[in-house]
Image 1: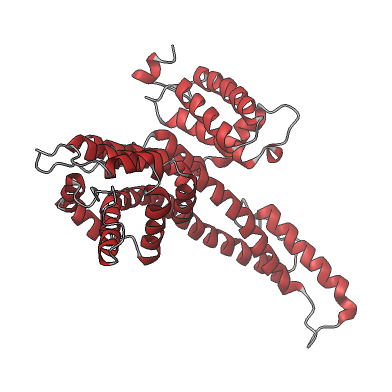
Image 2 (image 1 turned 180 degrees about the horizontal axis):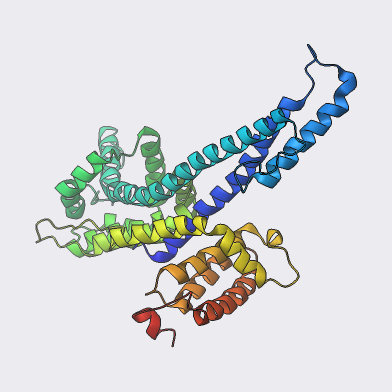
Length: 392
């Protein structure tokens, strides 16, 4: 299901978006402020262009130096209008940055909701395929073509699909979330049916079976998902366009869908059970929020901790992804007392292997190992319960 690594990755991506946006916003606001200190052809003397250049440079310098303090600290020998312009720019920067942060965090949380929406969309896929097969059968019958085809059109009468159609909880969830395969997507499904499904060996064996058992009806749906939807390259490429996080979300979705159909029992009422994206939604969301909020809140403090352990390097030279991974790992070790330090380090090493440079694994491992021991000795990292036992 929705494991903690997925939450760590999504939080990391959100933090990367924030820090990238922060740097871009800084440039935009500074350039906007500097534009106030260019000569106006209608009223200014261009012979004084050097004066404008100096004022522009001064404004830029003050902006960079006083941005952390949120206000110009020393106004001595600085013209009042320059100070006013810089302070206004700093205020605008933080106002826009706060908006950006709210948007990025909302997108981060929505990304988790999108997994559930896509799960529901995949759950109604067999119903769509059965409908497409029905249309194909009708077309063949009307045209009097291949009436003696070995195909028995079993998917149309598949009892698992029929029960899925009658599954009220799924129907309600789909309506509430406004889930549907739109016209263009259904056209794509028709192409898959013709070019992939009908040519698949397992599908053909099933469709030529005179009287499939309930297990065979269920197995063909599991095969459709496991070997076609989640494995076929062209299908995955299309779904990647539909969900930008498909490559990351695919393992979760595969697990959710497979478990739903594996647990199907025809004699039960209802025969299906919709699976939850998260086993403990409240706990997972708390973890998610803390990882994002606390890493941002202590960003400068965490940078300082990391910089002390980097020999002959300035923190700004460390790849942004590595910095975020390190800061998140330290945040997790400090904030979540029940998660063993070793687990945190190993999780972020794995994330660095997938999302950062080839050398990041050793770098991240080395820094975190040293910091974990030091912060534990200093009492900054305190573990309890399983976290304490696993770190002895």
